[in-house]
Length: 322
Image 1: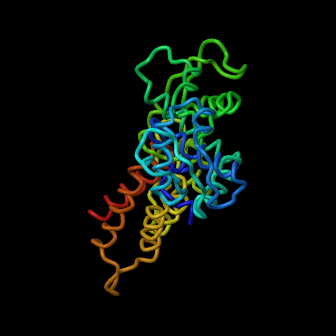
Image 2: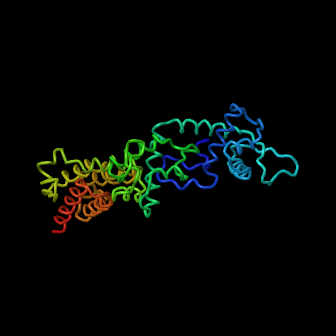
């Protein structure tokens, strides 16, 4: 499908590299050609007008056209002796290019896509500039990271994104107000640094952090958690109770779908006393399950839920070891 063409980084797949060079112009050029031709295929259009419109050299347009042609999205049309020059060539749209242009247009118009990209881009930009003090949010508009599929984010979008990141405690905003919403001097908090370094989707990271930081309010309040403000204490649990506990906290602690599925399988095996050899449950098998659970949960961000599960697993392992 056209959406799989690797011409442009996918803005919804986590932290993105800088859009330096021709990257920002490729989606713009393809959409420009699609609009100029009304989607008609194989209709040659001079591309020097794109260079004038974008105020860039024709050599840059040629580099953009060559990359899009290499991905099978457009054709170039040149007379004898014109190939491999610095002049912008005449270009036409191919079927794959028309499909990809429609996909780009839909992505650009999707508020959720734009918001997801803005959160990742702004947080990553602040992280990359962390040695600069003060770092003004207005400088973000001069960076390559401002472009979502070739289109710059608006001031309002950036302001709303900064407000979200500040409210989520990923960034700190001080100084004069930007767009009347947040302080224009921005810096990362430790939580923001952790979010960038994990490579997680920002919205998912925030949701996970908020859930794990919530006071525990479930059937384990009285029997499992002695206090959620300060040290967390866990009463000894049966194997079935421990499996239920792991299953309850797993979605908040492990976001990767494959790792989450593996963790839930371990909990099920622990609950059922499953033995891969068909015999009676043995101590070594249960210890292996507990080790896998501890390893999976141990890599999650520090939280009450993480501590509860690790303490319960630790006590179970001590009982197994006598």
